[in-house]
Amino acid sequence: MADVNTGERPLSPHISIYRPQMTSISSILTRITGNALIVAALLIVWWLLAAAAGPAHFETANAFITSWFGDLVLTLSLWAIWYHYLAGLRHLIWDTCRGFEIKTAEMLGWVCVIGSVVLTVLTLIII
Image (cartoon, rainbow, N blue to C red; front, side):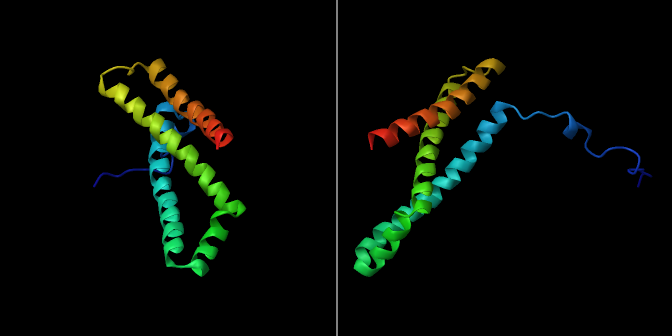
């Protein structure tokens, strides 16, 4: 084994100069929103099963879903649906071998973020 002196040099010199790009952030957000939507779907399934189980069970589930925390979860889930949808459209554009230029890819990432917020607010206003 080589004699390596790790005490005098930094282990990760790139960490001090690395700036996250929009493409990496949007990729991570796509994965996070996809998994968060599973949690939201389970919450809605619980609510539906409680409705089928009887009034006592439904009262508990409905109290949770209509609380401030339930409203927050469902609002964030609505944002996650819109973000995930727009990110899917971005991937469809990429599947046609377009939009790979750095500026275009960054712009599409911002379109997903800003567009999902705008669509969430519009959906909340309409509902």
